[in-house]
Length: 259
Image 1 (cartoon, rainbow, N blue to C red):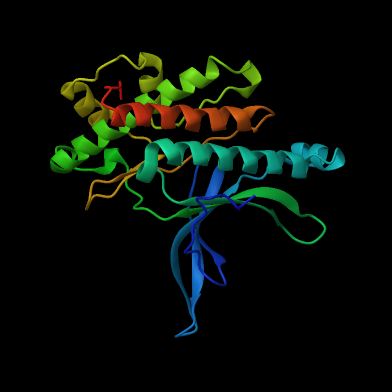
Image 2: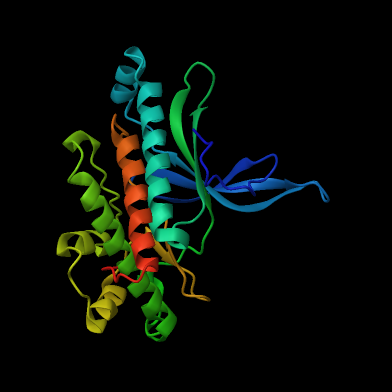
């Protein structure tokens, strides 16, 4: 599950799950530690580990009894991996380097299959945590504007794909960004955001899934939601990348696009 083209190349040797950093709707977040061979001590690796929450005892027993615990976890890993490929393709550095692993946790005899996410660690600061001067930083305005533009273009391409494939193979690429992603998707590709609307997005957003580096004002989308990757979605994903390539070729040829 981890052999995708965007798999981070700088993951540490001898990694170990470190202290808990937080908890999201779908998972627990821990630091990922590494061994410094020069000093023989554990150090921060620059990555975090996300492990999906334990199911209830009833759900866990039902899944295990029917042999579905691995199937469910494997499907979740596959979904996140492919969705990451799509988001990274269209949003670029707004999505931190991330890898996905199917593994087991727990004591022998009571282990469960889990979806483990290894993600580049970014500053744990939301837009809401910035002070008023920081929220007025021109770099932040430009980065939010650029993210909105990239989201609009991604949903334009995916809209073309979804019009051509069956409902079960449609791609959503939804992100829980405190309304930014859903607002862009719902407003459609022809909607033009004013400067005042971009400022309002900055002032009102409090999503824990959209983080900002207060030094550079770079933004990071750090959560990819849950789901299952179904038959036909591979072809839909390939179609999205092909449509994007055609759009870019036309753009190079001098045809203006709505981006």
